[in-house]
Structure formats: C-alpha cells, structure tokens
Image 1 (cartoon, rainbow, N blue to C red):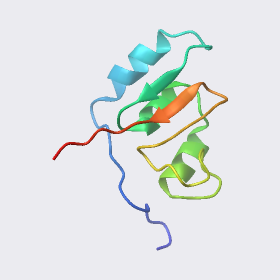
Image 2 (image 1 turned 120 degrees about the vertical axis):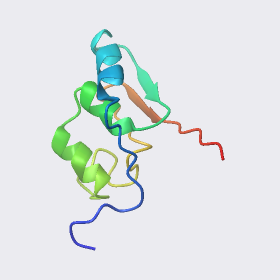
Image 3 (image 1 turned 180 degrees about the horizontal axis):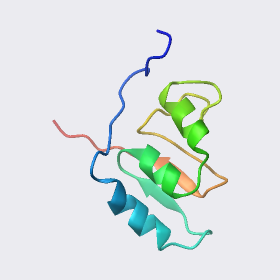
Image 4 (image 1 turned 135 degrees about the vertical axis):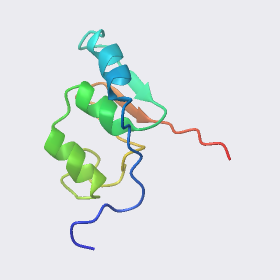
Amino acid sequence: QRGKVFGFVHLANGQEAISSGAIKQLRKDDYICSTYRDHIHALSKGCDPKKVMAELFAKKTGICNGQGGSMHMFSAEHNMLGGFAFIGE
C-alpha cells in the first residue's frame, strides 16, 4: 500500500474557490465546520499543506494523526471544528 491513499478521497475539482473565497472573508478567530471535502477548508484556514496531505494518506503526521481523511479534518489551532458529512443515498 505504499504511496496509496487509504480509504476515500473526495476531491473538490473546480469547487476550491467557493470555500476558499468564503473562508478568506472570515477573521482568524472565526470558527468553521464543513459538510464535505474538508481538505480545501483546512488549506484555506491556514493548515500546513504537508499535514493535510499526510492526513489524506492516513499518516500519523497528518492533521488528525491519520484518522480523519478528507471528510473529518479537525484543527483546534485553526478554529476548524471538523467535517460533518451528510451523505444521502
């Protein structure tokens, strides 16, 4: 499994500007939560890109120690409350 993403990665191709633009309007002390594709929110909120990528690869060095993946990233330091994905089928 070397070099592979563990589990699912929900990309935001073409949608990055929406969350990035909205988050850039917030103050540093504002909190956010996401419903999906949290890695874009984490990057927009200022989280370390290397830690975000490590999270996508389920590495211990990830923003949530490899436990959150692309749907459940949390960062107290960046006032990011995590993702609460609502998926209907």
